[in-house]
Image (cartoon, rainbow, N blue to C red; front, top):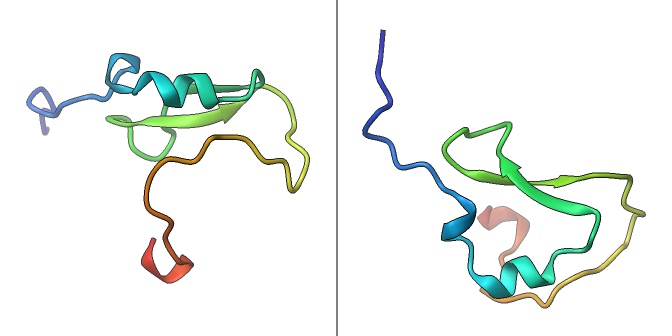
Length: 66
């Protein structure tokens, strides 16, 4: 039996305003299915392949770096 009470959980209050403004209307941030302490990006309906949204802020990474 392990307790995760000391683990910080990411909330919407932790997300910068520019990130929230950049989300398409059919995309939401909810708890991640992979890591329950983090937020994940969830689509409320299908997103067409190649759809772009942003603006992108941050460092671009190569596939081998992620």
